[in-house]
Length: 195
Image (tube, rainbow, N blue to C red; front, side):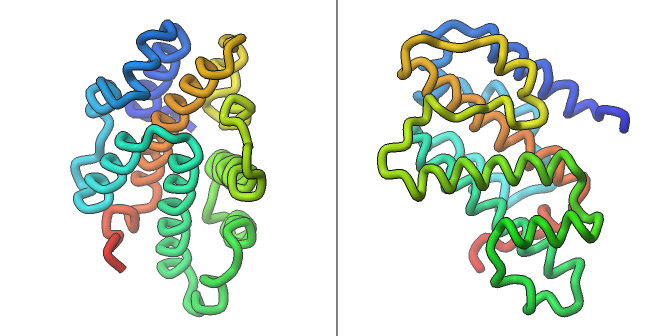
């Protein structure tokens, strides 16, 4: 598969993030500048979804909340894909997230990369939901397909710095997933977020 221009630009952005110092990462996580950093990648076609998604993504400074919101959006997107792809979607729509992903993967609707990334997101979400004091500095971001090499290059000794770095990567990766898979699944453009 040939990388799209957006994928190349995201890769450049992930490379930039991996080279940032702690002060710059803190500014971005605190909400100053992240939107500008990725605004070039925002799909013009997404109206309601994009505005709300971006607002949610960049206003959240707590990693637990960020993970829950990312998971919630992707559950909404997966449900929309199921409704579009399956005649008897009502039989599937109430399954757990993991089960829905397995069905979409077995039906060749999800590629290996998105499947793996959403499984990783689900695993992180489960850690935050089931462990009261799960530490965001423990998230292994190298499990995400596009972050394998970048994440291994940079580790922080101080947990606060590692938490901020992980948070920043999650914000950027959340936008990456929406952007790249909006091209594959046009249903994303038509999502009704008020439903």
